[in-house]
Length: 277
Image (cartoon, rainbow, N blue to C red; front, side, top):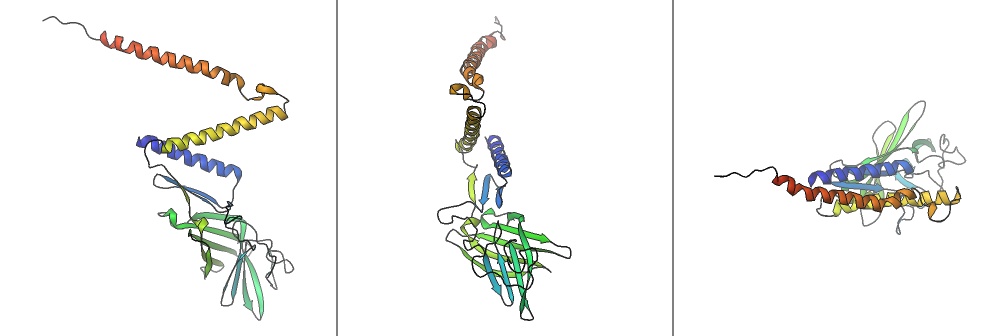
């Protein structure tokens, strides 16, 4: 039973990774850990958060001393109000549209003016666990940008908090041009698929995945054959000959197995010969 659980668990994890790769989803993470699959989807809409973890204002903002930081997770920033006012805003929209062509921007006040530096692009993001031994803790999203002179980055730690959004509540400079902020958000909490239980738990999940894939294949094939190949009626179903022959093949297989089991007791009796004492 344990081997079956392990194989089903690994197969489900592999299928999840393939599906995520195919849709090219940003800010998605799936981690197998101790007979469970921990899924994070930071951009998935929900009733309370229709834009996922993205800030509805178009950006998050942190201010510490003379440093200002704007960022958006999993997308570029949008400024409908209070745009950054910088004397220089290269790689992020320029002075007139500063902030709209990057995902993270930091400004330091020098001589009475804010000098801005782009430190992150959504296209160059990486998501990982905050604590590899505790997936429930949350995830860290690291975005970076490279220039001819230096490479900058921003790491946003998204801790699990099912009660609501808190922060960003910290800003630390961890390198020459590397910054770190932290916030608490319900999207830092994973969706967990457990494979530790007995019975039909893992098997039911596995069968559900297979049925969904089969249903998607049948639907897509039927639509393609109906609208693009002009095949109508039941003939539009893909691989119709196979589905028609499936009951007969199943009956033949069951009959063959039945005959094999009926012959087995007779074969066992011929292995012994009577002995007279």
